Amino acid sequence: MALPIHLAYTHWETLHPPLLETGSYAVDPEPGGPPWRQCDEVEAAERGWFITFGELPDGPSGMVLLAPGDVRGTKLIIERAAGYCLGIDGRDGPNVACRGCDRPVGTRIDDCGYWQVVRLGPDAVVRLPSPPERPVMDWPELLATGALWHRLSEFRDIPAGVALAQVVVAAGGAPVEVAPGPVVELLGRALAALLPAGGGAKRLDLAGPGLGEPGADLVLVPIHPQTGDMWQPSAGAVPVPMDAALWAELAFPPPRTRLPMVGGLPAGVERDDPLPRRPSHPFQPSREAFRYTLARMPAVREPWLKAIFDRC
Image 1 (tube, one colour):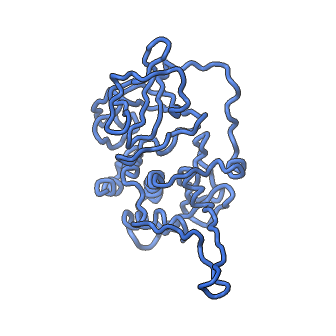
Image 2 (cartoon, helix red, strand yellow; image 1 turned 135 degrees about the vertical axis):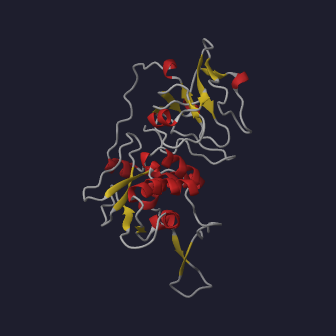
Image 3 (cartoon, one colour; image 1 turned 90 degrees about the horizontal axis):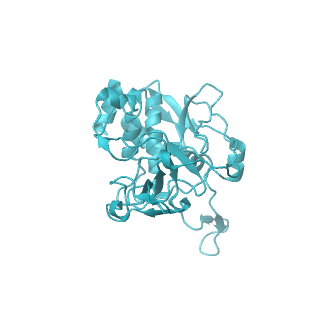
Protein backbone atom coordinates (compact mmCIF):
# COMPACT_ATOMS: atom_id res chain seq x y z
CA MET A 1 0.00 0.00 0.00
CA ALA A 2 1.04 3.64 -0.32
CA LEU A 3 2.95 5.16 2.56
CA PRO A 4 0.26 6.74 4.77
CA ILE A 5 0.11 10.51 4.57
CA HIS A 6 0.04 10.77 8.36
CA LEU A 7 3.24 8.74 8.92
CA ALA A 8 5.07 11.28 11.08
CA TYR A 9 2.22 12.94 12.97
CA THR A 10 1.06 11.70 16.36
CA HIS A 11 -0.68 12.58 19.61
CA TRP A 12 1.69 12.71 22.52
CA GLU A 13 1.06 10.26 25.38
CA THR A 14 -1.72 8.50 23.47
CA LEU A 15 -1.64 4.86 22.44
CA HIS A 16 -1.95 4.63 18.65
CA PRO A 17 -3.22 1.80 16.45
CA PRO A 18 -0.97 0.06 13.87
CA LEU A 19 0.08 2.35 11.04
CA LEU A 20 -0.70 -0.25 8.35
CA GLU A 21 -3.48 -2.75 7.79
CA THR A 22 -2.80 -6.40 8.49
CA GLY A 23 -1.50 -8.17 5.39
CA SER A 24 -0.11 -5.01 3.79
CA TYR A 25 3.28 -3.33 3.66
CA ALA A 26 4.77 -0.03 2.58
CA VAL A 27 8.26 1.21 1.75
CA ASP A 28 9.61 4.42 3.27
CA PRO A 29 11.96 6.02 0.71
CA GLU A 30 13.43 8.47 3.22
CA PRO A 31 16.09 7.92 5.89
CA GLY A 32 14.60 6.90 9.21
CA GLY A 33 15.79 6.45 12.77
CA PRO A 34 19.21 7.01 14.34
CA PRO A 35 21.80 8.29 13.91
CA TRP A 36 20.47 11.83 14.05
CA ARG A 37 22.45 14.83 12.84
CA GLN A 38 22.24 18.48 11.98
CA CYS A 39 21.98 19.33 8.26
CA ASP A 40 22.75 22.67 6.68
CA GLU A 41 20.07 24.45 4.65
CA VAL A 42 21.23 23.12 1.28
CA GLU A 43 21.51 19.51 2.40
CA ALA A 44 18.18 19.68 4.21
CA ALA A 45 16.48 20.97 1.03
CA GLU A 46 18.05 18.14 -0.97
CA ARG A 47 16.37 15.76 1.46
CA GLY A 48 13.01 17.51 1.13
CA TRP A 49 13.13 19.77 4.20
CA PHE A 50 12.76 23.47 3.44
CA ILE A 51 12.53 24.44 7.11
CA THR A 52 14.21 22.17 9.64
CA PHE A 53 13.12 21.46 13.22
CA GLY A 54 16.59 20.46 14.39
CA GLU A 55 18.29 17.13 13.87
CA LEU A 56 17.19 14.92 10.97
CA PRO A 57 17.20 11.11 10.89
CA ASP A 58 20.18 9.64 9.08
CA GLY A 59 19.32 5.94 9.28
CA PRO A 60 18.80 3.72 6.23
CA SER A 61 16.29 4.63 3.54
CA GLY A 62 13.99 2.17 1.79
CA MET A 63 12.86 0.48 4.99
CA VAL A 64 9.93 -1.94 4.70
CA LEU A 65 7.07 -1.15 7.07
CA LEU A 66 4.73 -3.79 8.50
CA ALA A 67 2.06 -4.02 11.15
CA PRO A 68 3.67 -5.53 14.28
CA GLY A 69 1.32 -8.51 14.24
CA ASP A 70 2.47 -9.51 10.75
CA VAL A 71 6.10 -10.09 11.75
CA ARG A 72 7.26 -13.69 12.33
CA GLY A 73 10.56 -15.34 13.31
CA THR A 74 11.98 -12.40 15.22
CA LYS A 75 12.72 -11.48 18.82
CA LEU A 76 13.33 -8.27 20.72
CA ILE A 77 16.85 -7.14 21.53
CA ILE A 78 16.09 -6.42 25.18
CA GLU A 79 18.98 -4.01 25.79
CA ARG A 80 17.64 -1.81 22.96
CA ALA A 81 13.98 -1.96 24.00
CA ALA A 82 13.87 1.45 25.68
CA GLY A 83 10.85 3.72 25.48
CA TYR A 84 9.13 6.65 27.08
CA CYS A 85 6.38 5.02 29.13
CA LEU A 86 4.10 2.40 27.55
CA GLY A 87 6.27 0.68 24.94
CA ILE A 88 9.45 0.95 22.89
CA ASP A 89 10.33 3.81 20.59
CA GLY A 90 13.46 2.72 18.71
CA ARG A 91 15.69 5.40 20.23
CA ASP A 92 18.66 3.00 20.38
CA GLY A 93 18.42 1.78 16.79
CA PRO A 94 17.39 -1.68 15.57
CA ASN A 95 15.71 -3.61 18.40
CA VAL A 96 14.39 -6.65 16.52
CA ALA A 97 16.65 -9.58 15.62
CA CYS A 98 16.26 -12.74 13.55
CA ARG A 99 15.31 -15.57 15.90
CA GLY A 100 17.52 -17.99 13.99
CA CYS A 101 20.81 -16.06 13.61
CA ASP A 102 20.48 -13.14 16.08
CA ARG A 103 21.22 -10.58 13.38
CA PRO A 104 19.46 -7.21 13.93
CA VAL A 105 16.87 -6.82 11.17
CA GLY A 106 14.67 -3.89 12.11
CA THR A 107 13.00 -1.67 14.66
CA ARG A 108 9.69 -2.13 16.43
CA ILE A 109 7.92 1.02 17.63
CA ASP A 110 4.81 0.84 19.78
CA ASP A 111 5.23 3.43 22.53
CA CYS A 112 2.60 6.04 23.25
CA GLY A 113 2.75 8.93 20.81
CA TYR A 114 3.79 6.69 17.89
CA TRP A 115 1.94 4.70 15.24
CA GLN A 116 2.65 1.03 15.91
CA VAL A 117 4.95 -0.32 13.21
CA VAL A 118 7.92 -2.56 12.53
CA ARG A 119 10.55 -1.06 10.22
CA LEU A 120 12.67 -3.76 8.58
CA GLY A 121 16.03 -2.79 7.12
CA PRO A 122 16.21 -3.04 3.31
CA ASP A 123 19.22 -5.36 3.54
CA ALA A 124 17.24 -7.73 5.80
CA VAL A 125 14.36 -8.27 3.37
CA VAL A 126 14.48 -10.82 0.55
CA ARG A 127 11.64 -11.03 -1.92
CA LEU A 128 10.48 -14.63 -2.39
CA PRO A 129 7.89 -16.20 -4.69
CA SER A 130 4.49 -15.79 -3.10
CA PRO A 131 0.82 -15.53 -3.97
CA PRO A 132 -0.02 -12.52 -6.15
CA GLU A 133 -0.19 -9.23 -4.31
CA ARG A 134 -3.59 -7.66 -3.73
CA PRO A 135 -4.70 -6.23 -7.09
CA VAL A 136 -4.94 -2.49 -7.35
CA MET A 137 -8.58 -1.48 -7.11
CA ASP A 138 -9.98 1.30 -9.26
CA TRP A 139 -11.99 4.10 -7.67
CA PRO A 140 -15.44 2.57 -8.28
CA GLU A 141 -14.27 -0.68 -6.66
CA LEU A 142 -12.83 1.17 -3.69
CA LEU A 143 -16.19 2.83 -3.15
CA ALA A 144 -18.22 -0.33 -3.71
CA THR A 145 -16.16 -2.44 -1.29
CA GLY A 146 -15.95 0.20 1.43
CA ALA A 147 -12.14 0.08 1.29
CA LEU A 148 -11.91 3.84 1.87
CA TRP A 149 -13.74 3.78 5.18
CA HIS A 150 -11.68 3.49 8.35
CA ARG A 151 -12.32 4.74 11.85
CA LEU A 152 -10.24 7.88 12.30
CA SER A 153 -11.89 8.78 15.65
CA GLU A 154 -9.61 11.00 17.73
CA PHE A 155 -6.86 10.92 15.10
CA ARG A 156 -8.80 12.67 12.33
CA ASP A 157 -7.17 16.01 13.17
CA ILE A 158 -3.85 14.64 11.81
CA PRO A 159 -4.88 14.16 8.14
CA ALA A 160 -6.94 17.34 8.53
CA GLY A 161 -3.75 19.24 9.42
CA VAL A 162 -2.04 17.82 6.33
CA ALA A 163 -4.98 18.85 4.14
CA LEU A 164 -5.04 22.33 5.69
CA ALA A 165 -1.41 22.91 4.70
CA GLN A 166 -2.12 21.71 1.16
CA VAL A 167 -5.10 24.10 0.85
CA VAL A 168 -3.12 27.09 2.14
CA VAL A 169 -0.34 26.47 -0.38
CA ALA A 170 -2.80 25.89 -3.25
CA ALA A 171 -4.58 29.17 -2.41
CA GLY A 172 -1.31 31.07 -2.82
CA GLY A 173 -2.15 33.50 -0.03
CA ALA A 174 -5.57 34.44 -1.47
CA PRO A 175 -8.76 34.32 0.61
CA VAL A 176 -10.63 31.00 0.54
CA GLU A 177 -14.41 30.65 0.56
CA VAL A 178 -15.33 27.20 1.85
CA ALA A 179 -18.49 25.56 0.51
CA PRO A 180 -21.14 24.96 3.17
CA GLY A 181 -21.18 21.47 4.65
CA PRO A 182 -18.59 19.14 6.13
CA VAL A 183 -15.57 20.92 4.64
CA VAL A 184 -16.35 24.21 6.36
CA GLU A 185 -16.87 22.31 9.62
CA LEU A 186 -13.45 20.67 9.21
CA LEU A 187 -11.29 23.52 7.86
CA GLY A 188 -13.37 26.69 7.85
CA ARG A 189 -12.25 28.13 11.20
CA ALA A 190 -8.58 27.37 10.58
CA LEU A 191 -8.57 28.86 7.07
CA ALA A 192 -10.29 32.02 8.31
CA ALA A 193 -7.58 32.42 10.94
CA LEU A 194 -4.67 31.80 8.54
CA LEU A 195 -5.70 33.54 5.31
CA PRO A 196 -6.94 37.09 4.69
CA ALA A 197 -10.56 37.96 4.09
CA GLY A 198 -11.83 40.02 1.18
CA GLY A 199 -12.59 39.85 -2.51
CA GLY A 200 -11.10 37.47 -5.02
CA ALA A 201 -11.66 34.48 -2.77
CA LYS A 202 -11.06 31.01 -4.17
CA ARG A 203 -13.91 28.59 -3.55
CA LEU A 204 -13.05 25.28 -1.89
CA ASP A 205 -15.22 22.16 -2.10
CA LEU A 206 -15.07 18.37 -2.27
CA ALA A 207 -14.72 16.41 -5.49
CA GLY A 208 -13.91 12.84 -6.34
CA PRO A 209 -15.21 9.42 -7.38
CA GLY A 210 -18.93 9.02 -6.88
CA LEU A 211 -19.23 12.68 -5.98
CA GLY A 212 -18.66 14.58 -9.20
CA GLU A 213 -17.01 17.96 -9.65
CA PRO A 214 -18.64 21.07 -8.19
CA GLY A 215 -18.01 24.56 -9.51
CA ALA A 216 -14.98 25.43 -7.39
CA ASP A 217 -11.46 26.75 -7.79
CA LEU A 218 -9.90 24.28 -5.34
CA VAL A 219 -11.21 20.77 -4.73
CA LEU A 220 -10.25 18.33 -1.99
CA VAL A 221 -9.72 14.94 -3.62
CA PRO A 222 -8.67 11.54 -2.20
CA ILE A 223 -5.28 9.86 -2.43
CA HIS A 224 -5.50 6.24 -3.62
CA PRO A 225 -4.67 4.09 -0.56
CA GLN A 226 -2.77 1.51 -2.61
CA THR A 227 -0.88 3.59 -5.18
CA GLY A 228 -0.66 7.01 -3.54
CA ASP A 229 -2.00 8.62 -6.74
CA MET A 230 -4.33 11.57 -6.41
CA TRP A 231 -7.78 11.52 -8.05
CA GLN A 232 -7.70 14.02 -10.90
CA PRO A 233 -10.57 16.38 -11.76
CA SER A 234 -11.32 17.14 -15.39
CA ALA A 235 -13.10 20.49 -15.08
CA GLY A 236 -10.04 22.67 -14.45
CA ALA A 237 -10.18 23.01 -10.66
CA VAL A 238 -6.91 22.71 -8.73
CA PRO A 239 -6.85 19.35 -6.90
CA VAL A 240 -5.79 19.36 -3.26
CA PRO A 241 -4.80 15.93 -1.92
CA MET A 242 -6.48 14.49 1.17
CA ASP A 243 -6.21 11.21 3.06
CA ALA A 244 -8.78 8.86 1.51
CA ALA A 245 -10.38 7.85 4.81
CA LEU A 246 -10.95 11.47 5.83
CA TRP A 247 -12.21 12.33 2.36
CA ALA A 248 -14.71 9.43 2.45
CA GLU A 249 -15.88 10.53 5.89
CA LEU A 250 -16.67 13.99 4.49
CA ALA A 251 -18.04 12.90 1.12
CA PHE A 252 -20.27 10.08 2.33
CA PRO A 253 -21.11 10.58 6.01
CA PRO A 254 -22.95 7.63 7.56
CA PRO A 255 -26.70 8.18 7.83
CA ARG A 256 -28.14 8.71 11.27
CA THR A 257 -30.75 6.25 12.45
CA ARG A 258 -34.02 8.01 13.11
CA LEU A 259 -36.75 6.25 15.05
CA PRO A 260 -40.19 7.62 15.98
CA MET A 261 -40.80 8.69 19.55
CA VAL A 262 -43.48 6.84 21.47
CA GLY A 263 -45.32 9.21 23.76
CA GLY A 264 -44.11 12.45 25.22
CA LEU A 265 -43.90 14.35 21.92
CA PRO A 266 -46.54 15.25 19.32
CA ALA A 267 -47.30 12.72 16.60
CA GLY A 268 -44.86 12.85 13.69
CA VAL A 269 -41.98 14.29 15.70
CA GLU A 270 -38.80 12.27 15.42
CA ARG A 271 -35.50 12.31 17.27
CA ASP A 272 -32.02 10.93 16.71
CA ASP A 273 -31.52 7.59 18.44
CA PRO A 274 -28.97 7.51 19.93
CA LEU A 275 -28.47 11.24 20.29
CA PRO A 276 -25.29 12.45 18.57
CA ARG A 277 -22.42 13.27 20.90
CA ARG A 278 -21.59 16.94 21.22
CA PRO A 279 -17.88 17.82 20.96
CA SER A 280 -16.42 19.43 24.07
CA HIS A 281 -14.61 22.06 21.97
CA PRO A 282 -14.51 23.21 18.32
CA PHE A 283 -12.56 20.92 16.01
CA GLN A 284 -9.05 22.05 15.13
CA PRO A 285 -6.70 20.43 12.59
CA SER A 286 -3.42 19.24 14.05
CA ARG A 287 -0.98 22.14 14.36
CA GLU A 288 1.98 19.74 14.31
CA ALA A 289 0.80 18.02 11.12
CA PHE A 290 0.17 21.43 9.51
CA ARG A 291 3.68 22.71 10.30
CA TYR A 292 5.37 19.43 9.37
CA THR A 293 3.64 19.39 5.99
CA LEU A 294 4.56 23.00 5.23
CA ALA A 295 8.19 22.31 6.15
CA ARG A 296 8.32 19.71 3.37
CA MET A 297 6.98 22.10 0.69
CA PRO A 298 9.27 24.54 -1.21
CA ALA A 299 6.59 27.24 -1.06
CA VAL A 300 7.19 27.64 2.69
CA ARG A 301 10.19 29.84 1.85
CA GLU A 302 7.92 32.47 0.31
CA PRO A 303 7.56 35.42 2.74
CA TRP A 304 3.76 35.24 3.08
CA LEU A 305 3.81 31.52 3.85
CA LYS A 306 6.88 31.72 6.09
CA ALA A 307 4.98 34.31 8.14
CA ILE A 308 2.07 31.87 8.55
CA PHE A 309 4.47 29.09 9.51
CA ASP A 310 6.22 31.25 12.11
CA ARG A 311 3.04 32.31 13.88
CA CYS A 312 1.54 28.80 14.11
